[in-house]
Image 1 (cartoon, helix red, strand yellow):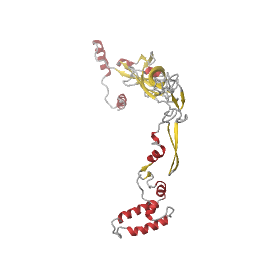
Image 2 (image 1 turned 30 degrees about the vertical axis):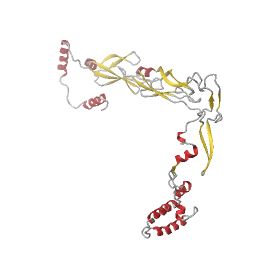
Image 3 (image 1 turned 90 degrees about the vertical axis):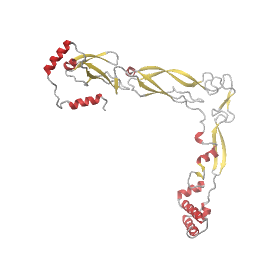
Image 4 (image 1 turned 60 degrees about the horizontal axis):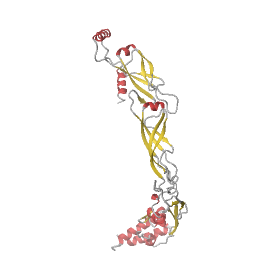
Length: 368
């Protein structure tokens, strides 16, 4: 530990000196050692030292820290920090002390991929979880079957040892993990040959995971007690399962709604039609397309979406109308389209409907 200057001795006052006595002593010494009036080689350093002492002892907080620790910094005794203090009187850095007694097992995290239909229907999924489980051979006590287990003679079953030390700061109790039993409080005559005394072994365990209807991509399911076994009889950790969706060929989820692209011919869009559309449940639904339907228009099918999480009600199925213009026409189709073109005449190019069209284009491009 570095040697500290005694500020009281430097100013020539007692530890019970008042602020006025300290100021008076400083003024006297300052006039004596000020470099402007004292040409001695050590006058400047002496003046700096008494000034430092004066500043510390006239500041109530800094003086209190100095009286307690011998330093005005409050971090310890000079270069001797708080960490060193604990190391000296408590037998090591308390932050690195090993836990004693029962320890809770670690939580586990894994990710699974499910189909969109699984999110709609809910159900169960069998998953395989590699984890540390209680050793089947020794039952978790770490002892070879048939051998004796006894209370640790060093710590008397407490799992910790205590030592009382006297210091300049008073009486300290040093508490540390028992070096003989490792905090278990018990010792065994012979360790288990399967787990080597740890009380746990690694195994793959099949678990049935319940998937609630309406779960969304990126949600996490918690399975209490499905994590790793605890140490020394501690409780088991939990399992957290992150759910991801695989891509569906027909539907895209938007909240609790399902988006489906429905292709129409120009004639169906112009005249309207009743069509069958697939649903996520596997059946078909009859939908009436209104006459004059436009490309990009959305038709809503009520109650055919995803169940609201924790509820029996459901979202909707949204049909995005995709009017498909044929690329290859038969001779008869070409003739009929020609007649239709002549009857309709040229399409107006004024601004009517342009804003709405641009809005639909923006939506179709993802709002970009």
